[in-house]
Length: 499
Image (cartoon, rainbow, N blue to C red; front, side, top):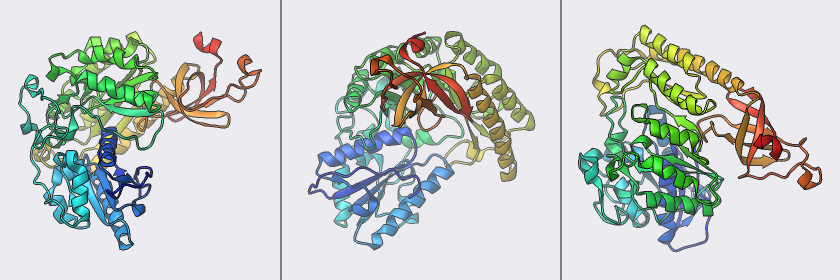
């Protein structure tokens, strides 16, 4: 099935076999691993393939139309397998299931159950009920922002913080995570900082089904980082809907600045990366910590979304070309080679040709390492869905091609600027005398990669033969060529790397 990520197999247990299929973002990956941890702790075993499972649990994405379609296609593909002996049931969880609930269940009878985030603490029992033919009724979606107090400081929930307490508004989305089972291994793993979002961007429905912003206590983040290190992880990627808000509900808006050095100091962790920064909330102190803390990647994932102040105001966002370029100048004053990525939306209601030209001006001046370009589409229950000034589909598609083509050209040029640069690459795969991994400016899944060639580099410590490398090694290499956003680099010996 396209886009499917399934769990590895496991030993037999009385709960039956379940295959977990993960779609969407890194936050969903963490949710799937928590679901897998709960299930195996309560008697289920993990199946390697949907056709080997009693239940296929599809963790859906409900962000944009393409992601919704992929989720539905995956559910239908899993349901098609029921013509054989296995699987016996297909269950939808995740953002699409939470967002649409009973509506999704009615439209997709091929799914045997559609579960809410509130079902996560009881997932093992819920699946047993489904297999027994007594699936719980699909939930009626609600605005999860209303489940917690409006004031962030009043959201501090007592233990177990939604872990097993029925009706806890935080549910599985925040708080302690004693149960998590790694599904795919690898030396890089996401680690959730927080869940939910308090911003009211006109185009985004995520806060309505993910809820208000809730930070995880630092002790829980550090405990999970240590657990990940014990599992062989070398880089942790801190994720949330808005990482720059971390700590505001714990009474300390600068808590992330203090937490990052502690995560970087966890034995076994050699790189920490932060994703999902809100430009309007980026503080000079946070820039400094991200740019100068040993073990923290000088990487800035900044969701600019546009550069025209007029369009940004309609989006319920802030800034514009000059403010954004000033922010980038501040970043590069600390680290000239810092990595920066962004996403932009074109075709937003009311966007004019002058607005598009302003976005082009910003992108041309920003020297970004990666740019995601998305065409606007109406999302249910968002302010933008009711706005005037809608553009036709052909105009939006034309602007996506125009800005997308420019972005592709610009990020390739930025990669070429790195030729001659010495980069630190965390190797994720090694084959023969070639390693593949990511430099500090390259996040997994969304950015480019770096191929490290080392067959011709003798090392005296190994009798003049090339030094053996393995996944998880952090090596220094000099960039010698590029392929689009991807880099090709030659391994340096220790002396050159230190220089």
